[in-house]
Image (cartoon, rainbow, N blue to C red):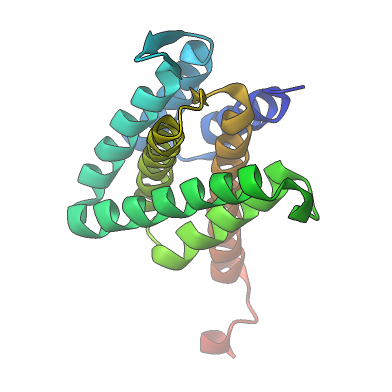
Length: 195
């Protein structure tokens, strides 16, 4: 069951980006990044006794590229650190108190990270950069914290990629709904400026 939400969310995101975004370089880069993430999701390597999936490094690179493209490097880096710490904290909370999760883990984590990213910035490119880099930071911080106690953990496994996929799908859907609302507002004859 692990990876089910990730694959569905990323394929739906790819369809939304490819067929509903305007033709531009950003659309091509989004689609390529999503396909590359899907392609590399199964590859992993061992580092100091831990299994690290290639998607952790790929998402960090994608995150930095989107942060640099938005030209708000300071805000993007700070936001990524905040998201990373929040994600690592949620993982630690789940580890120490799994009974307290009243709703499914994937839904709780995804909605929390989505709300945090929306709160940090309204710039879509910066949101994508923050969540990608923040997710990678959170996975590495969680891995290092567990390593202190001698516990083994995978970084970037399908269980964690489920959360990432749903957050990306929510961000892309929110952007498309915003564009639709703006389009309908511009086409409407009942706007306040035309009455």
